[in-house]
Length: 77
Image 1 (cartoon, rainbow, N blue to C red):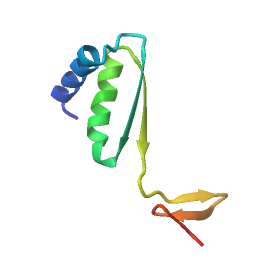
Image 2: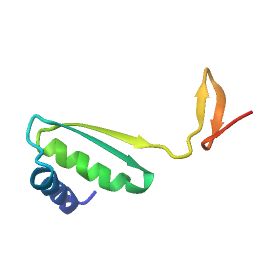
Image 3: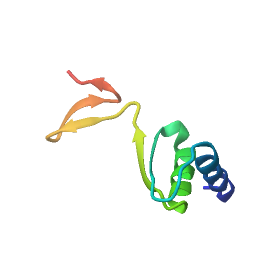
């Protein structure tokens, strides 16, 4: 992760979004934007904001009680 990208992210969070210390920030991203999301997450932490990051898995394998019910985003019959 680039320190420069984190610094740019800090600027975006404070100057464009008005994020301040003590406020909360939620970052949601898919695999394609993971690096950017991690930079924004680190920037939020550096600004002393409460930060939570979620990832969206586009084609997940899903198990319930050890039984595969979805493979790569498609229901298993």
